[in-house]
Image 1: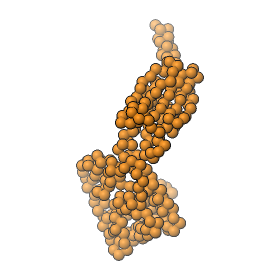
Image 2 (image 1 turned 30 degrees about the vertical axis):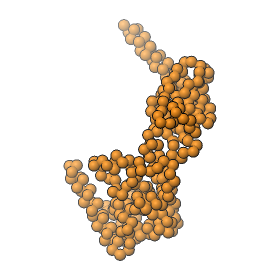
Image 3 (image 1 turned 90 degrees about the vertical axis):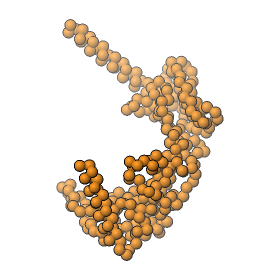
Image 4 (image 1 turned 90 degrees about the horizontal axis):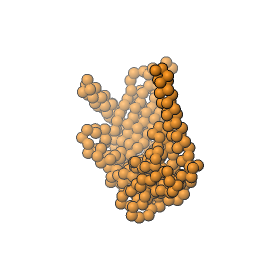
Length: 305
């Protein structure tokens, strides 16, 4: 009986080793890649080829194929018209044990998506909907605005070292904008579906409509007067650089001590509008915004309890 158990265990171990070796060999074999316009050729040492070509018209058609024959097969097939798509990069994920191919267009800056290919060559998912929905266009204009904001915050004329300066555009899927359960999106946010694919937008114009700054600063002094001084200079520097924004978050807090503790007390304001940043009465407006935010958080805590 003991010998049978040992043989069974040995058989299980052997099968596991064979599966592991085959899995790893598949990765090694198929990672010999020739990239070329219109697609790629993945060829293993056994002479088996997989041809991935990219195309899109009004629909996508994935053609399954047999890896055991010595032929070239299309995974991603053109359905109606040729395109100028090419495979920008292809990789293998050890975590999901499948391949991914990132596809781009030579003439469309917003046409880029990813194909996910299983171990036997079937394309089981793609992200082309991100192109059609405007998500890729939104990502592009987001990045353009972030670059401008980053440049402004790196100005040597700022008196403070910003802990986490971030700028982004409030652009979201229309579904999120219309969802009554989503309550953290500003009312001036734009719908990504309204963006036109490949349209060149001025990030400054978008920033004036929906640009949002988020700034964290550590200081030994935490007062509304200092907060007012900080956002006044931010407005001045951004005005001088011609980088508009619609609103700003500011979190002013004490620095961490050597023992990892932080002194109580902070000034935190959210969605503080650009037009409210002027010197007269600014510290009072910041205090009111801080108190309103504290009350909001207290209400949320009470609801959760």
